[in-house]
Length: 380
Image (cartoon, rainbow, N blue to C red; front, side):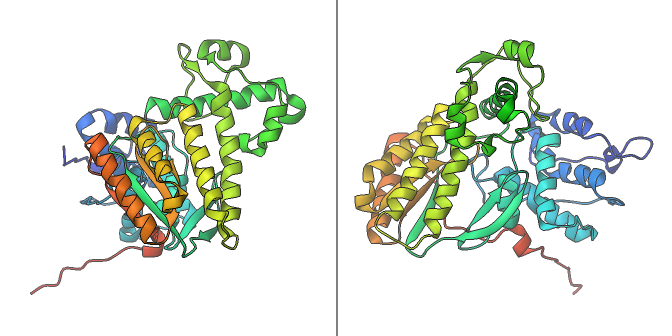
């Protein structure tokens, strides 16, 4: 349904306190046809909880977007951040810092929408910079200087046509399994891991030297041995089997790959630079597939890019975001040969999948750099 209405009074309890976010989640998710409104109304609820003195009169919010829904290009984060910027601009409220805008939007998604996402998408939507890649350490949200995209490098995003959702069970089970892995390491290797806050504080070699994690473990067996997995936004399903070892290794390996990617991208261009960057992307995609976040469409796109190869100017590709469908990012050279190869990838994907790919290119300014626009109607 394209229209959702809610009484302002529903945002507060009878005693005047903000309505608990869990209650707002149930209210906004009750009708699947309007559950999208949680991304918008949730902004108001979170602000009432988090910003002293926040108060709102009635308002109309019109949502218009060219971002493909559910395609791994941060569509949910985009609408949260856009709504947040509009509400802050209209109300005169301040949340204290640029990072706080994204962190509050993550709370909307975690606690009102009910999707156990990290903060990467909200940070990119809020703090993106034209011509650069966002450098973000998600512990929980340390923003570093952007990494410039060199002029000889091109980046494209291809919508696979496969719907993606960070609220889906696959993404949630992978996150749950990673937290289970951390809990097990704390118990089985206390001398190294008793105070382990984040798995990525281990290097790949350090993880490989620790007692091996179980390849598969049911939620019931984990709970019996370890109790809580320590994650506030996911729950362990006793009846489900979790791929603990692979899911715990993925963030460790990915953290290392991202650091290597940044160093290689910042380095002076050499003949080995683009092949190295591309290999890191291919490794990342393979890791996503190994933990169950691949999809037929995104895997096909990556294979098509690999088939064109560096000889034709395309060096790497990987799924983006939470996986399980969505968008594939492609790395290539700036030049006619890579453009032609990219066009061939699109054509072959059309022929094989029957889907018309939606393409995005480069990087652009985030909402905070844009700010907000004020429109005043002038009497005639």
